[in-house]
Length: 393
Ligand SMILES: Cc1cc2nc3c(=O)[nH]c(=O)nc-3n(C[C@H](O)[C@H](O)[C@H](O)COP(=O)(O)OP(=O)(O)OC[C@H]3O[C@@H](n4cnc5c(N)ncnc54)[C@H](O)[C@@H]3O)c2cc1C
Image 1 (tube, helix red, strand yellow):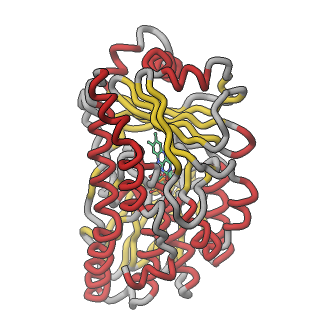
Image 2 (tube, rainbow, N blue to C red; image 1 turned 60 degrees about the horizontal axis):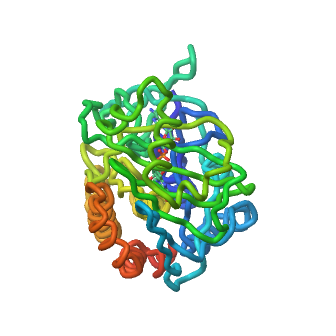
């Protein structure tokens, strides 16, 4: 059994940044990540420009700027036959998209360089509190090991089933949102435009990412997916459905070819969950998730990782009262920072997934510039939240 000050389950943006921050505070940290990196992921891959300074502080800013796709100046809405666009609100630089195969590798490498020990590809299969410490069983093919630490952080995302107490069960509902993602080449979308696309039963987004690829990511209700699929594989069926409902997507993708496999994930369960419960700290999607309509999940995961790492790096993790107090502070700050974005994203997603009659589409289109501005303000796209300001959060 190997002992640490903290164990972080999951090496996505939330887990990597929590581990990096804790390691910089002088703590011994283990990160357990089940996938081998680089790996692709269902995600639009857009990161707001306000992250440029925080990414510098994490040590990956230069690599992000060097590798990411072009700066995004305009936000569009493709709904029915309408194609509207508005300027990205002024703020601290333009956002850009970088494949999760690249970004997540950069962040986890930065955690490793800061001193975190990365167990990869190992899956956490069980965790149990035994008096002074958590014991976490990990497995890689036929190998088993046990790690122990007084602090346990769940950063395993929210879309995968599993036996951990922080993993939700997977009862299916017609209203479940299933996520899809594909990269394309030879498309006709202007390089600085990021349109939101609305279609019957779902919504999605298009954005230019690294290497000239176009990223299409979307969510669709399970009952609509069942109706449109016939005997076709799900990804191409979703694309056909989008192209049938959305002129802007048709024009952008008329001559495009997929680059790599379609990916699927979910159900996606947006909402606010516990941030500290049963002595487990939760970060990233485990703690709460915005509808991807505002493309803020990576930003929130990184910011929350920094917030949690700073809290836990300042306490004696062996003291239960100190852990509980840190959990309360973290939960309260998390809510102040992220709850408004999650609520706004939920309201916008509801507008987009309503039956899109011509009048509803017209009303949404008319309000598009003010909605983008409001969303940018609530989400931090136009007012930065660099990590050095988190003390004041
Ligand atoms: C369609 C769609 C589009 C999106 N577009 C954007 C966008 O453009 N911009 C944006 O900011 N956000 C976007 N998001 C949201 C974003 O992808 C997530 O919010 C973000 O990935 C959350 O990061 P995380 O670190 O919490 O979890 P994850 O990125 O899911 O990382 C969790 C990690 O834990 C690992 N893991 C899971 N279980 C175990 C286990 N038992 N043991 C060990 N490891 C484990 C997984 O392998 C994974 O690497 C989108 C989401 C969807 C569905």
